[in-house]
Image (cartoon, rainbow, N blue to C red):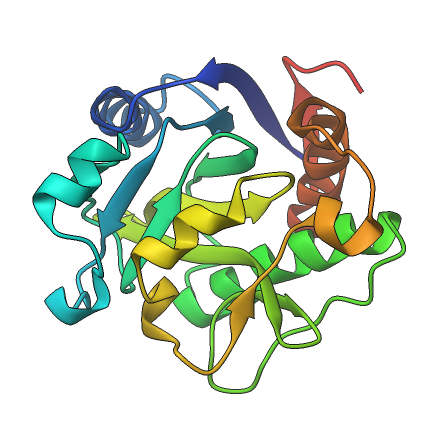
Length: 219
């Protein structure tokens, strides 16, 4: 069973997170580190994927500045999304070779991880046909946007709404999907839930779905 290194980074600015991912991708491609899962939170930021549309950003630059929201091109696939405090972001830096060189399978596996995490909270999460991400009813609790670079090395990943201020999603059309809303674990359960308590659950579910042995994280 291959190793999975887990790095819990706390709160990291988006520009710094891009730099960190680039460094870990380089090291993974060179074989200097094993498959790695970076777990973190971001300050308020709107990120643009390769399929983004300008009309899906609903705030002007002065309005974003007034609310303390940065705007960044991400380099991942997908449309517009929001990251902020109370949201657990996972950036898997994996070598998908030799047996997982299938982008569709990779996306479905990430969804399976998040469905498993939500099931541990008793939430009946599922996919929606033709869309990427994880929903409870018509509320999207997890977004996914990835990049697979040369050599089948992954970066970017998923964002799980644990207990964010959902009003910040009003700044965008999340992932370009107008017909469905967003939700969070805390909202669904009607109680406080912290990102910190989700870390072990996400780590364990990720290791199970991807058949990895965790190193560098306490379970």
